[in-house]
Image (cartoon, one colour):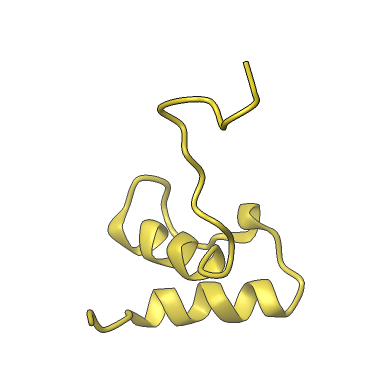
Length: 57
């Protein structure tokens, strides 16, 4: 299992405190921003964007 970064932990804590994903303090496109967002969305189901869900479209 990979070790989470400090930014991942910050993102997770931010979500739990009621922040939104636009509260990400890191520069868009940076690894820190990606890690923060990964922590922020850790408990959300993975979205499938390459094909519609069964019963849709």
